[in-house]
Length: 189
Ligand SMILES: [Zn+2]
Ligand SMILES: [Zn+2]
Image (cartoon, rainbow, N blue to C red; front, side, top):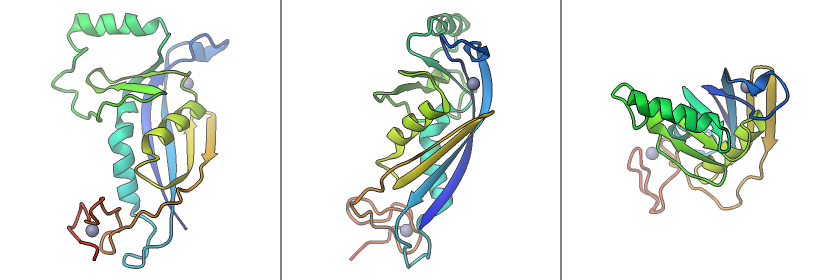
């Protein structure tokens, strides 16, 4: 069975070099739906608590919220950074508190201090799904991600991991490598 959660991301981007309106900087509220598949954990009678899927995903994906997402070769990138630098907000500001953990993958690098994500490919809805899956696949048994943004929507199916991820019978979240629940302290015997 599947547990499903949805979260919203507000971001600005553009399709650099694209022949159309989207080559101009603009913004979206995007909506991402993440489907996690496993057996039903009998202790809690659920696959995975949806709020925990959301929390895990949000820890990483908040880097994309209220963020500017630009491709690495976009000339806007140095221009924007120069403005942020001049304004003294490039390396953070006291009001920039909703920061995710910085990450660097093959597909994207997050700079939470200035709410910027630099991507290898144009950030289409398809591109966003690739990046999100790559960031979350080791944390959750993701079998499907759907991302909609304005009139654009895409979805991708993924193969569920074959190795078992034991969950806590009391709160449903994944046990750590020692068989201990990081939330309630349950120990698997
Ligand atoms: Zn767009
Ligand atoms: Zn627990």
